[in-house]
Length: 463
Image 1 (cartoon, helix red, strand yellow):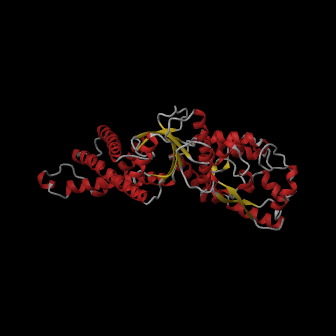
Image 2 (tube, one colour; image 1 turned 180 degrees about the horizontal axis):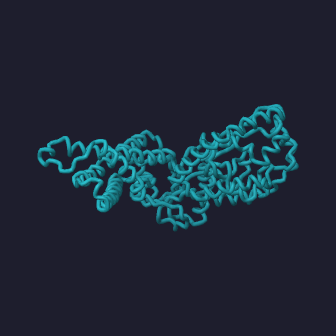
Image 3 (tube, rainbow, N blue to C red; image 1 turned 90 degrees about the horizontal axis):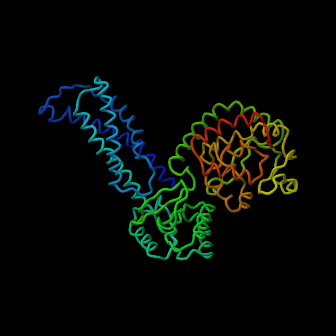
């Protein structure tokens, strides 16, 4: 899911609220400050401030109704007529709620004009706000800002219709950067180079003349290289739950999401990350100060270390931790590699690591060394919950499905951390993290966060 899509979808919420308030004020002005006053003197009188308070509350209540009506679903392409239909559905649902409230609480206000005109003006204003947002988004598409960079596979009529349709529609949000007629080793090699240079976002298979094994191979390839995958609807049956069907150039396209996090899940997860991490940093400030003092007294070197790690889609970032090892500990890693206890995987772990300082052993036992990770969460490098952040040299050894661990942001804690910590083999850890990626939901995150303190208190298997 493109970040620009998430941004514009999120912006619809405050814009809708603003337009609902403006619609309410416009109706008040029309009723009490125009010729209507002389044409039909108002029976129901209400002050502007009292009216504004009602409008602010009603508009706020309408937002979750809009959400239930699907007005905040993240669509790759949505025609204005479809947007208008959604607005009518959302505002009509809101009107039903107002009618019910008036029926049970007649004292709210008794002007049918304000209710009906507010409903109609709400439709007009909300749709106008969305037209403005979509116009800005589509104007950026014309400049290739925020577009999905597309690679198309196929040599039949469907493929060429799709390519020509996207080229002729600069406002679609899709830009074809490469067309491969054949699905073979040569085209996959070129696709691999494009993916390594972050030159594409999505692969669309638009040719039905490929076997299931070839199609499955291309899908797995896209998963490993962090590319979204879609296919023409008549190519194969969708066996996954995380799919959405859209229409591009009059061709039904089935898009397979890499994770349920694609869409509003990322926004919800990000909001939770920022709120909880900011609160944690404030509350843990005294512990940060104490740790800094003891680290400096225990050994020479900085209080914090900045470790090179890879995040979602293989993006590099620096992970903050309290220093728990002697200075230049990384230079000793090659010598100690023969003692690595994590057999069968790329990770490096040894108990009684001679590089760990006395206070560092205490920090690691209780996972206190990882508290500065909250800084990375606020920055957006990692999330509170996710796969373990791995080193670049470790990631270079990943194979096959293991590369899908980079489909989402790594986390401070995760399913693997609460299910065994360092006792797990890398394959077991990877399977747990892949399960999390494929089955994410908000309550799974809450469950992992609530279980993490107990795992830390037990201090089991920490190295």
